[in-house]
Amino acid sequence: MGTVRATRLAKTFGPVVAVNDLSLEAKAGEFLTLLGPSGCGKTTTLRLIAGLEKPDRGEIHVGDRLVSSP
Image (tube, rainbow, N blue to C red; front, side):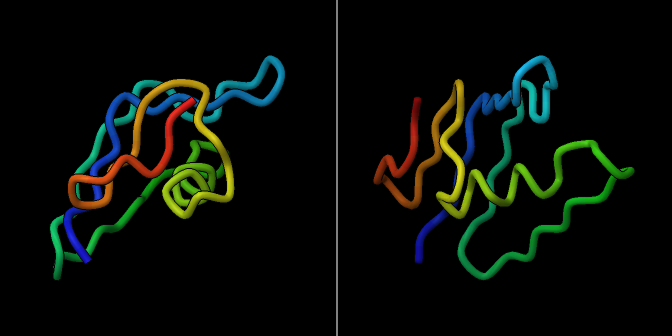
């Protein structure tokens, strides 16, 4: 698997902003850890990357392939 790259991701649920302007990159073989308090968007971020949620804004690439966008 290639590099996983998220660029300027945003996701809201009604009036609740779950993820706002998040960008990250994880290269093949790297480990990525998301840390933060309850309700800060960790699970939503993972669901976006896994394709279980669709972002309101931003893009997710695996290698050179666009796998998710609004």
